[in-house]
Amino acid sequence: MESLKGRDLLSVADLTAAEIQLLLRLAGDLKRGSVDLRCPRKVLGLLFQKASTRTRVSFSTAMYQLGGQVIDLNASVTQISRGEPTIDTARVLDRYLDVLAIRTFAQSELVKFAEYASIPVINALTDLEHPCQILADLLTIQENFDALEGLTLVYLGDGNNMAHSLMLGCAKVGMNVIVATPADYQPDLAVTQQAIAIAGDRSQVTLTQDAQAAVSQAQVLYTDVWASMGQEDSASDRIPIFQPYQINTALLKQADKDAIVLHCLPAHREEEISNEVIEGPQSRIWDQAENRLHAQKALLAALLGVA
Ligand code: CP
Ligand code: NVA
Image 1 (cartoon, protein in one colour):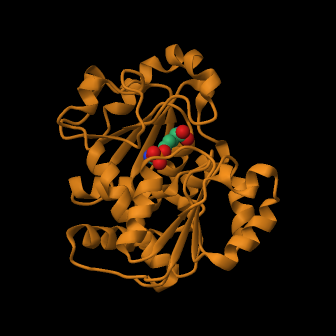
Image 2 (cartoon, rainbow, N blue to C red):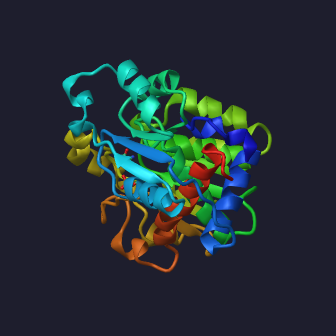
């Protein structure tokens, strides 16, 4: 884990395949309690400009369990809300904190923080990516199947931050990924090309509009809200457009009989996923949410150099 000490995690693509595998192994060990890591006196700052339940609480609990401390820097109670420049805030926080997790809108804002702060900066979700979620997702998939390589994950819905990070993460570990979206909601072209390049000839990255055909190849079905944070105004217009991409019992029947269903949460039940599926036997959504804690504890330990 030496290679991760002091590094930023701004994108899933920042991690090598070997680093992802090491983080997943450590997360599994932490979950089983077979290792106990400590980083006393280390302080994690959580600078969030969007709402969060899982990311905020799992990072906080992970840091407390490692023996460190957390400062919740809700952006509205800092001078950021009054216009203090990012490059100033970043340099000041760098003098107080040991690691900083940021949830914001533009990826460029996160990149600017990382440029001006020498401590590890973690992407806790931007409009472009959600890498911490992917570590928990891959851990959950690994718990359910012998190996990640060669599995096919089908993501249904909006070509958003989750779609981007899943494409990159699956490509890194040799999983096939099919992203099924309406025509006007495809993932970012540059991220798609990056994922295809990472996958090389080891696995496939495919975009489609055909949810039914995509699902027939799936061992993992994944969805996310149809309107992300910041897109609330278009939420009701999106419902009829995205309806064919809902994960419901009929769609799930088209997949492998052992397929599992994941959702990063929060869910809009009866929109992107039916109640029956979220509560059904193929759902691994609550394990997935739990795994945020274990995966991020492994990540913090690695970035702080105690793993
Ligand atoms: N999945 C996820 O990041 O959830 P929160 O928005 O609650 O942190
Ligand atoms: N795409 C969602 C993910 C939430 C965890 C959003 O950005 O709101």
